[in-house]
Image (cartoon, rainbow, N blue to C red; front, side, top):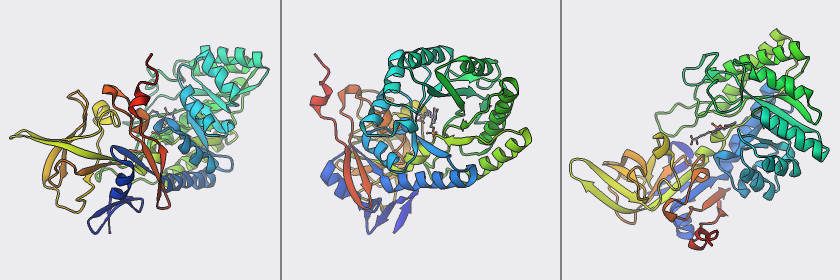
Length: 433
Ligand code: LLP
């Protein structure tokens, strides 16, 4: 048995297995293109976060799955069954979570522009926390909560001013962000002052999110330092004691062999140590810590399988392998030139001596999944798989060129089941008058 990149993708006697199920068997039942999602892997990651956070942050701390990474009913049910919370960023994600029976008291509503309707809908759904982005939103929440006669818990989204790529503290780094209120401009402080004046809004603490796909722990340590200093400052200025500090998501994931292997437990341990040190030094109460992992819970639990349609060799230039999906199910190469590992499904152990570019089927030259991939010689009808597609693939998929969205099949303890069915052509015209 050989493992490819992550332990849920293996080869045995010329066959490719995903989460211990023969991939060709799943394809026989459900067709291509298709997203496969390994439920055991997702639960494994959630449990790693849960136990590390309990050990290093203390009781009450927990991960909140950032469901923008991948959102559909069955996934909220899995998250719910693990007893953790979720981060939602739109009324659509909210609606999906509610429809799945999620405990909305553990849901945190993000976003830089929540409409009055969104706010009302969230309150009616029993939402736990709004993560408030700015003053107008604070006013709107106060007004609607007053009308409903409720007290609404909120966190304030704070921009700490950290550049996660250089991991340097720069005081104005986040000032140009469209999200949150920057400490550097004084808006963060103003938001605290304003929140404390409101009657129907209960300020519980603060939130920050410094970025995504971060392999180093230093930027998170910097975030702890800046945010605890802010907590101490707000305590001295307004006598406000923050109960909650939500440090957002962002831990990196291995997409290719060359990416580093990082330990989420070690990251959490280092963050916890810094937190303890800061709380002691600043003489503040240790807040309950939340993290909002998205990518690191679901990315390596995913794999996309495509069927090859055409193989076009442009002499001396490149070989195109065209597949039955593309930017409609994975726009991440088109958008960010994201790296991916591509493998052959039906010849997983053959020598990879054919250099090619994997092209999608959209009428768009930029519809590329990956360039300069090494595969065994492929031909029409072969199956290929793109690994680590569990995050920001299905959730970012579209109907461009009126291509129906691919289904999601979840595998749990060796049994595949349909979690999202394949879109039909009728689905495509459902809203057309
Ligand atoms: N919390 C907040 C407030 C966020 O904005 C995000 C991601 C997360 C948590 C989760 O971060 P993660 O653990 O997944 O890194 N479409 C892009 C990623 C956008 C991330 C947006 N915010 C991509 O495909 O790479």
